[in-house]
Length: 502
Image (cartoon, rainbow, N blue to C red; front, side, top):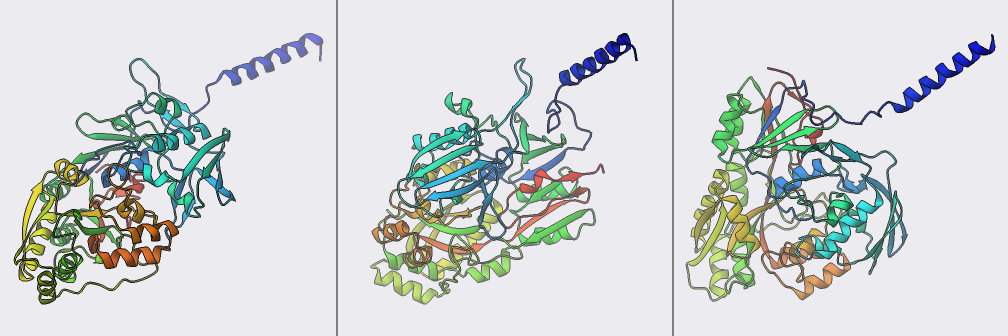
């Protein structure tokens, strides 16, 4: 081969290398502004998310969606044990934990807008530090009390971050389940509540009339539309105006859906805990015997048998008995109206005891309230029901403006919930102690993390009235695949759901 030929071949190879190097690297997800050939999936929900900032979200819909918009350091397995998600960890000492981010991890996705192209940035340890530093700095976060034991956070390198504690806490990794935010946006106080920027499998595409999401891996679009009325929500599914619904229907409606050949209905056991919340500052509800009377005035099993979904079961504490930190079955407060009346009289209450119960306008919640009202009347309790739209109702509860209310703890995984919900220093906005319950004995038990003793103390003192763990279901068009209801009601399968055209 002559010198000229060698030079030509060399130049050709160099040009190929240069061309190859100049080719843009392929993203690990489909461009958000590129229309997907997949049919859009419309998911009708009973309540729209209120806050898409994981540091402040406290309603169930927000927390369910945030799991898909953001990634967390830690998640949980089917036995509710903490497991690595974004990172693995090692306990270096009783007061130090080292977290190492996975080599392969989803980047933050910044959508296009205002002349700006879409871009992606690798998530680093600096983002982890910024996220958790902001929670401890902002005392208005309901999670801030949970991290009061955090001394400092030190970034070792881009993949490694150290958490130093004030006191030993062997359950600390299980607390690191909040979505990680981009550090530069945390610094400028970006509005994550309405414009989330995360590294999860879904991104918010549009939120003007409905929450339109897009899956980054394949461009699949999913719309969440709020349909408050359960009957309307059910009929929209039957008439194929929406593709799927989940939860918040009475059992007879579910039976009706199961009879439809065009629909698929899936059910599962549930772990979300419904309870009767009490204002512990109320002169009557302060009395233990009054709270015990309330517990004996509700026939919970009858309610479950007649108007609850299949797989619902009696509840004794926020965490179910099979949870690793629970592992006990608490004695149920039996339905006993004569005992309830006697307890009220022993507490010095003039019968009937008049109480106001606040709930949402959801038809099933109103139905449950009406049944409890009738049961309590026999026990000498005159229950007035006040139903409010969800936003107003939830605001009233957080402000402590109630005597009684009904809510459900959703997606709870760690026993630290007992401190967040009942510790004397966890009053809103620092925590979820909405009933303003204060008990020095319980505070002492919480400091020891003796969860069996904690749950027994709560069950004996009744800062709430335990009701049940609700069964779960999802109903969908036959064309919907790869979606099943979770025990905690999460929407995690939106990361894998698919549909074929009808």
